[in-house]
Image (cartoon, rainbow, N blue to C red):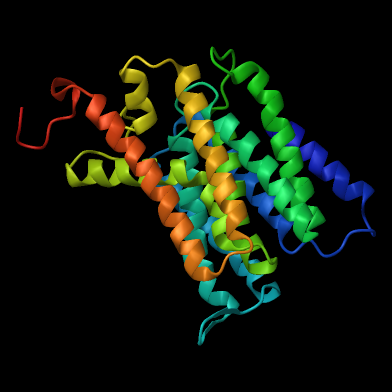
Length: 298
């Protein structure tokens, strides 16, 4: 999947050399994703410690954004003006968080690959509508590579992407949401909302585990999509439900394009509320004996 996307995008850049406009940080975004793929692939083979993996990820993201900072414009939020360098550290944290949450959500057949196929297809249309041909092509090749991968990863899966594949996708989307939001007219919410189910599931689950004093960085089965399979739902059914949520989130993201800031906030809240209701439904279906006990309780 990664090789197919890299060769297709690299081939397009080679053939279009001299005929395309400045790509606004896109090549560096793709290079960052490839670097994180190599780190994830090495982790698949050698099993790096979470701390070492995080430090390498954060250092790489910070260096990439620091290098791009002089080429990115200042950001105006109301009366406040934020210079380009002010986004290096928070942007690096966001990119690394997206990278890792994508890895956390790669736990059942077809979910991570299906998310990429739907989200990148949507981003292709969005960037094409804005006339951002480079970002559109990049998402087109990621979508196509993910669809090819899904042929073998759709439930019941025959192959799996591992940390290398999920790191590539998460790094690409995380860095894209920072760099493209700063260098193109596409609003940040449009680049993030398609991943609302991944973001909310992972954030809530990890905060819950931290509150309970559990080792949140270790493997577990307490994500909502995992709890859905524990209820007896098949991988195919859970993945299909999750991808329907992604498609609905993409529709809301499309509505954000022409919306005012206040309306964008309202639309994002509506998506979060809908996903939260789904989480409450899952919890309501679980029997008390199957719920993870609170600390100090049996």
